[in-house]
Length: 90
Image: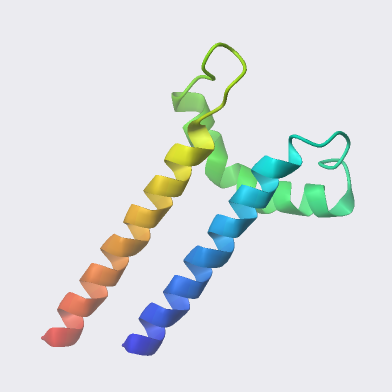
């Protein structure tokens, strides 16, 4: 069970970094149109889209939805870890 939890931790960490890199790419002109930017967009944007629909940008400029999405991702993985540990102890 520890290996499964370790694997989930790796998946969460990698996906968190993908989100952070995708957000930082928005600060640089024309980077999102590159191959890497489009690939990251295909991986990250489906997850961020529901949060962007629910949370409008502050002042029309500052988008905090990725921060909320990172918190949600953290708590989802912690919930999965807790359930796995619960069933492992049975």
